[in-house]
Length: 308
Image (cartoon, rainbow, N blue to C red; front, side, top):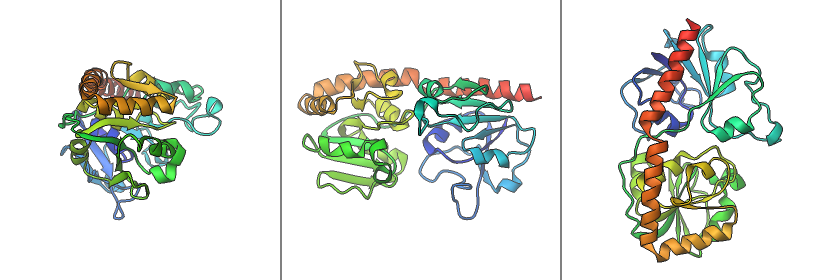
């Protein structure tokens, strides 16, 4: 198929474009939010072609991730709206911007999202995340903690930025991602937007992975850390409670419990290795790329055939 896809969510798209299709990604001179083109810090195959939007024709299906993209999709092209995010505002009552439509289907990336968004009569489905298996493997020789997050200064409590300092008494923290350089703490070191492969190699050397987001769909970096074989410490919120079983990490809404667990993993590397091995096994089984692509192929075929 020829699939129209804007470059919005780099990590998710990296898995999505590994399929058997031709992926047409809009690009503009500014390479802004509406025309980023091919990824610069992720490995995308040659089947991903960047073109000015007006030159993209012969589209079989459009993957839409933001409401305004709908206005840019040619008429009569079937649309799958991918919802990456948890709702905001009055959460139990939050209406999805695509609610009560009969011209598209919403594909949620977690069952938590589908549960919490009010989509009215719009058809929905869930295709859980899948990722390209990282090449790095956990060694954990550095008695440090790793966090991967984007814009933690701007997003603040959403990403649990206010909690970072609670863990620095146990070990130094290394924070990787976009917009992390504004973090100011003597025990926190930042690595601003490194290439994905380099980031994986670096976090694999840290003793454990911290996932402190209060309100997020399901961070792909958490799944990547698990597939690398890292023991994970996470807030027991949103989809994390389904992604991380008790023998693969420590989850709690009590921050002190996670701080104590971090100290335990620093003191007992054998326990860290045991948790990490189980985390890798779980993440490879549930969030493997083959399952993800097969689920998407089935949905794309169904939507394309229904349109015809």
